[in-house]
Length: 211
Image 1 (cartoon, one colour):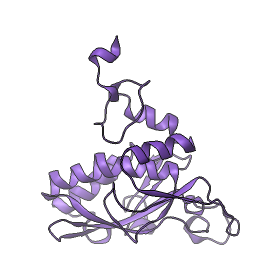
Image 2 (tube, one colour; image 1 turned 60 degrees about the horizontal axis):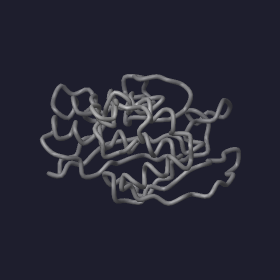
Image 3 (cartoon, rainbow, N blue to C red; image 1 turned 90 degrees about the vertical axis):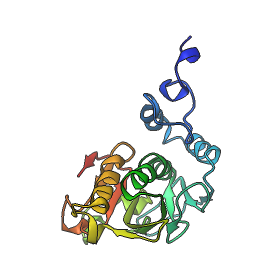
């Protein structure tokens, strides 16, 4: 009976779709299927996201697995293009792109974002590049560092320059940081520490932090 009166995004037993508005069950559905490699790819493909499977292979101590490359259509263009991401990160990123990034840009900057500049996804290293310690989520292609954005009108907004500004650019950056907390396990910004002064770190690790 619920199917007759409730929209599918509010029903936990209906499939997750990127083209649906965020509903009561959207985040629940995402969190309960993001680790399924088949469903993850299916949702991305059905949502029009162009991707290519990346083979699992060891790189030193690091071995990204279940990863893909986002190759263009379906998302705001990334620079550098075609970054390698775990499928769960790619799915969270796609949801953030559609339901946080572009609405915030239109509402706060007056138009859509045409390009997302990032500092990388996969890097075989420890946290903060320390010699000792545990591996970063970047070692699993499970994190992306976003440095800035270009709008359709040609304006450039960067985390390093604009994050703390009391103007539309600053409010936009803080909004996309805050909105990321629905879709990523950890979201770190210049408010966290100096190491993040020039980027927003989004990852799908086990820790949950939003700052």
